[in-house]
Length: 189
Image (cartoon, rainbow, N blue to C red):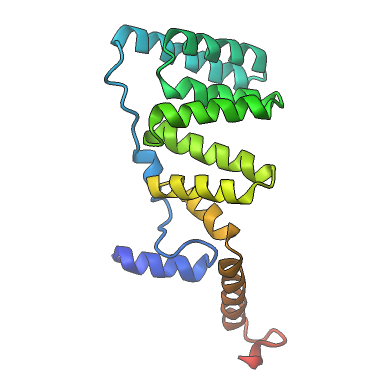
């Protein structure tokens, strides 16, 4: 059986655009939990059910109903970050980027930028910033999410680094030439 270090080296060789040390199927974000212990259990159950209904509505294409469910969850328990994060996605689907950013900011604030919801909100806000070509803000959010364990955010940080992209491209070319020495230009190594 290979050690974690061996797996990290193999991952880097076969997937040169991933950050060194990333091991496939090892995404710490999946292990993150939100601390909901401060909320009344009955109220929390009601809010979770509303959020689940909202997610189901959004998945079926009824974004208006999803927004209603998420807004109701926020009305009942405005101190909980998750519903803001979910509503941000519904707002983004409706094209309300400003509203989505507002909800993501509130979600990050309420979660303290920690836990599963904080990590997801940072990634989502980073994506919104990146789509709007606000690269520095996107990089900051991705870096924070990467520190929380998001493999996707780590990948975005690497992709946004022009020096890493150049090095990864050169490394990929070298590896390709080593794998296929009969290709033209492979003897130049």
